[in-house]
Image (tube, rainbow, N blue to C red; front, top):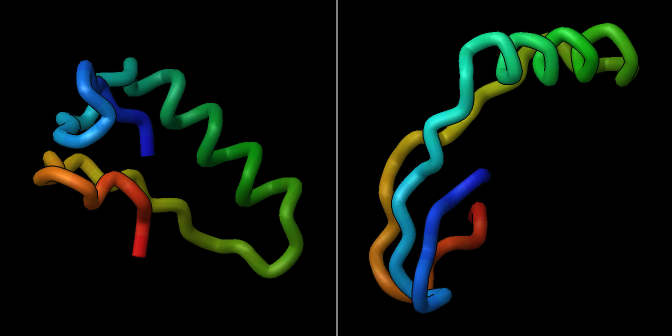
Length: 53
């Protein structure tokens, strides 16, 4: 997850260019055996919940 956070507690998702996301996704799918899907979480996070669960 790529986030913008000023205090390390509350975060909003970062806007990445579609071309960057497409390149990352393509590389993961093509280079990591057994992976056929990549998702990017665009939800904002409340305090102390930045980590993916």
